[in-house]
Image (tube, rainbow, N blue to C red; front, side):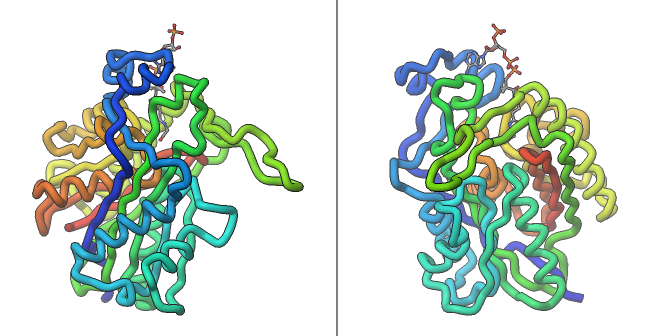
Length: 321
Ligand code: UT7
């Protein structure tokens, strides 16, 4: 049997942290008290104008290659999860492959599942490796959400940030990835989105994030609880045997509610939403990388990754690190 295993992680956030008070100073009608209390967010990072998602993704990928002791030429599959691609096409993954100097041949493509994108991409890469067709996959979640924030809408613009996280999966004799479960329910397509597209030389629609925050909140808590239990049961692992829980970093109240329902104490939950804000597809690999680098996540430990977001989409990947 062939399994897939994490052999390296990486992360990159652009520029200096932007505090809640910095946003107030920029004229947004909000407060540190509201943001910290309602969302847990204290800081986020924004890319400078002209800095693209593929550039952030490339930095995270280089970081992961270094951690794994690998070269770009060792990668035979490149998947980028993003909602903020550099352009309509080529894919962000192809632009990252070029920036990394990957030799021609390895497939490279984007996955669009919004904040569940990384968990979707990891699931896809795991299946490629388990099939025997590929041996080393670079999986990246990367976003420049600052490009699609409406600074007139305090209900959304304070929540999001830019960044990229990467993970390298390699073929292994022992798992690795223990279980994957991904889902979508399009009946909730309207709760969260950017309803815009280029057409006839113009941008049609509104090129900013719109969200029914309370609807997303409720859907997210229920979906995350269900899909956590699904992945754990697929691998016959109990919540007591879980070492680290890394849910999508959108709101600390969502994270706390899901952890409570699962009976996982907050000491076993990796939380980075306070310093990164919601970085959509980048949030889970960024959080994982933080906890790997600071020594919390150790080899052999069970780690549950979770995404949830627009579409509506959600999913879990359970790993033995
Ligand atoms: O990646 C997945 C996508 N996103 C999510 O997971 C987000 C899910 N939803 C949430 O995290 C929360 O619903 C929010 C943080 C977005 C909002 O929190 P809430 O507790 O649901 O607040 P609300 O929308 O019900 O608004 C409560 C009040 C309102 O004022 P009134 O009507 O009570 O006077 C808002 O106008 O908070 C006000 N408000 C703000 N006040 C200060 C909304 N945004 C802000 C703000 N600063 N930035």
